[in-house]
Image (cartoon, rainbow, N blue to C red; front, side, top):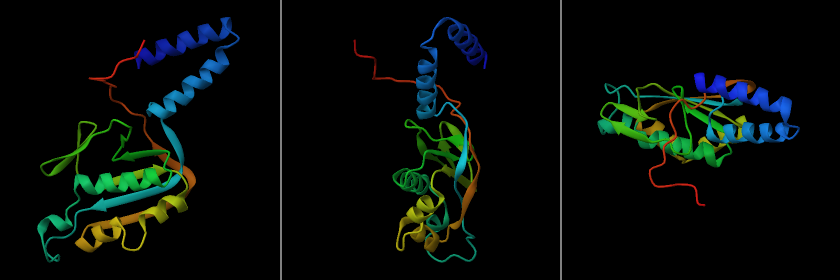
Length: 177
C-alpha cells in the first residue's frame, strides 16, 4: 500500500510536467488490468461447488469431493468462453496462479481454500453459462458424481473480482536486452 501511494504521488508529479502522461497512464492502467493488480466489477457468473453428501452417494468417495482438477477445468472453460477476470473464494486467478491439492484443502496462490468453492467470473453471462452447461460436459459429469453445483447468471455489474495480492516472481525469465 505504501508503494502504491508513492506511485500515485509520482503519477501526480509527472502529470503536471509531461503532456504525454495521459497516454502512458492509459497504458499503465491496461497493463494493471492484464496483470490482475486492479479490482474489477462487472456482470458475469457465479458458480458454487460443494462436496456431496457421502451418506447418500453411491460409488467412490472421491467422486463427490471437489478436487483441484475440477476447479481447473471450470476455470479453463470460463477462460475459453471469454471470461475477463476470475476469482475463487476471493483469490484472483492470474496467468501464474497455481491450483493444487493439499490434503483436504486446495492451494490457490499459496492460500489454503476449503469447500464450498465460489468461482466468480466477469464476462458475458450467457456465454459463460453456456460454456459450462454443455450437455455431456465436464460440469454435468461432476454433478453426476455427486458434487453439488449451483450456477447463477448475474446481468448487473455487481460481481467484484479482487486484485491479485501476491508477488510476481520469475525464476527463469528475464528481460532480453
